[in-house]
Image 1 (spheres, one colour):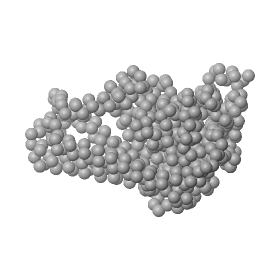
Image 2 (cartoon, helix red, strand yellow; image 1 turned 45 degrees about the vertical axis):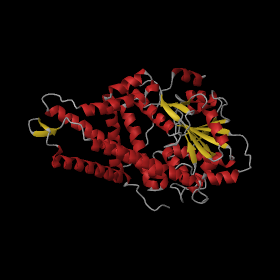
Image 3 (cartoon, rainbow, N blue to C red; image 1 turned 45 degrees about the horizontal axis):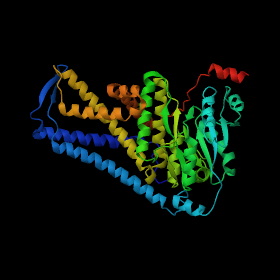
Image 4 (cartoon, one colour; image 1 turned 180 degrees about the vertical axis):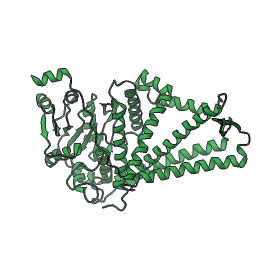
Length: 481
């Protein structure tokens, strides 16, 4: 089915490459110092034991320009490779390996009117009695509203089904499902997809998400204007509340959405919060499972994947599918209220990303994902090294030494942090300008990254966690009536 299988070694491969790159940089710096560039350095004593050299002078112009050129070259290289791969698969005529390639889809549907765009919404729900009402309200407030809404109740022990029935939507109850969200959706899609036409769209939406106004209209317009478009993903923002940890996550999501907008909708991941899929695309994925794609034949979602949304995105891209995340399609999603739940969520995301790379290996559609993991890994080492050097300097010097060049770099970095969260309001800007709290949050995420690589390398089994919501009093009264 695939030439390479990095299921266990993806994390170690990334860690090894990143460590090697950092080692080469360290070697280059050390060589410059031994070559005499450090001769004008001053010294300090760390804890009375360790002699520390430091230099207040800025790096040479050649070093600065070389670093900038290397960064731009790497960024441009990844962008060019990504664009060439996308262009190649858009023009592919290979109906076996890329049945969803735009050239093939456009040829197959030329001159055929498949009817107006219809939207069927599937809401996977496990004990979502508390959050489901707001989700349904946001759906019915859309203009036009969806044609059909189905709550996929998976092993619910609360009033989820009663809330759904009271709101007048259909309920699909999973049977004997042991594969969480992916398994429940596979059961519902197996019933739904056979009757769907070329212009019938299936939306998968989390039960703790609210759509912003105009979401469905914008998505339907995209599908109507482009017959080759297979999926539309939402841009998500964090819900209000949860204090400082909530603001950290809101700032993170604002920056992510801003990045996607700058990429003009080119998608990293079709978010599970709210994404729409053309039925023909989902059927092609189900047909490819077990042969060109990992998973069980006939299943849309790979139940072995920890991050089923990321895996489905790679699956669609592997089949040549065209996907996008328009700036008009925005949603508000839940945030993790505690550090423990945030740790569990991000560890699952990281483990899932690594395992998906292991399942697909190195292929054109995964180049961007491998580069992203390498970039994160190098960032982990860079931030840890930066903070460690600051600590060493603080402990080794009798008086604080100001480094004008690095102060200037820090000022530019701080400005970037503020600008990228500007639309989040004064709280977002204040947290960004303070800088140190967000660097600490970044270190928290870096620890998650390292833990994910270690767990993946030793083959530790990952757990799928679910955040339990507290039912609101008014909803309990409504259900009781």
